[in-house]
Image 1 (cartoon, rainbow, N blue to C red):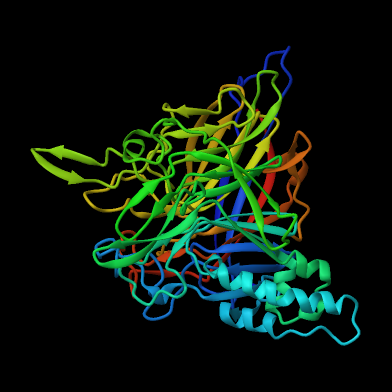
Image 2: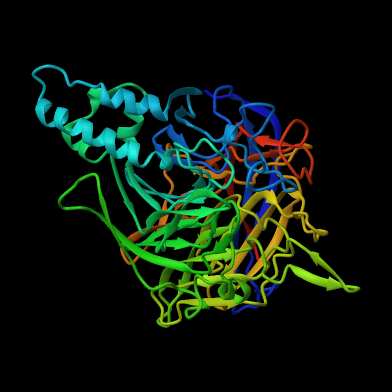
Length: 548
């Protein structure tokens, strides 16, 4: 049985209906669900310190790779806001080159560097006389070659990631080419797309390659691109730049609705410039009929408010979709027939295009977060709605752990944002809003089409350091969690009525990794400022009901 620290934060989350407090004779008493959320730090020793990483889940095993970590003097954490982005803001030493398998129940970890993984696969020989040995032997060099050609998938920072069944999908992320020795002018946002078989990759990292069948090897990895990488010369140095790519993003999110994937938000970051995605891009992918290690990708027209200028500075200057590194979450909406339909929502994110303001004739740059919401509804005639009335009041505006639940009694979908950046204050010149430990519940009313935010607790983690930024919420795979089904497809929104039982604590999942800030405005990485975190927090939900 796992041990947990005694310190925890007890949070009361109310899901309310706007009904009369005193029912008349004609009115029935309504029981309103009340959710008690308990956040407790797990006592563990062996989880790696990672932020902005990629993860897949198979039972109690977490497949972890990419992102940033701590190598020397806590050089993970928040990038240096006051440094030269070309050379010193993101230290190459902080790139995570390892692929981990962490078992959350046993607190056990296995790891291989990317080069070690390729070497292990390259040197593998199936057992003599085993079924399909010849076919596997012929396939091994092709897999090794594909991995080498797409190695930045396993080292990129802040990629877009999702999992469906046994497969995880990884898009984009930023970093430097694997063979780059000069950090200056080397940063690039990738257009790479990967499909990875999570159970099979876990066996590879654990050294159990003999457990893989021919079908497992054939489905281990597949890669594709939406553009091309071309060399250009900047200041006398050759730099790699993605051209003609639509799926070039870091700091966005990846979703799948039906058979279509959606790349939502983010930006194309390089050493000397950036261009926001300013859109949600629908696309499809499939394994090539002629090559099981290749993906065929088709990108459709973007969902955006700047269709004629997208991809240009003019779009960045006006688009409400100009958002990255914010909460972009799964959502449910109502169609014209009052049936549920699946979509996604933007809550918060950074940065507004009007961040440069003139006060007393002085031009000052403010890093202003978004506090309005965008509801994206791919199946409806209106593909998106901008909720300008919504005001998140600068709480939890940065990417953080989140989960969503549908409450049938109140007809609402609640999003819970845990920690991160945005403590409700408005930042000064050239500074981020402070880090926060707050929990915000965003309650979307399906009947009105409007969201209401509410800060439930100011310190869910119960300490003096700050957590949540660039963390992930990982569902507890040992629990019978019921997710809403829409048009025959399972969503990422929890069915609260089927999942939570009255008065019984339910271990819903874990908050893992991210940035640990040792003060609320660290401004950089390093001792006493910030670092990549290895901490794990258990999230327990208890459902009660009260008379309304």
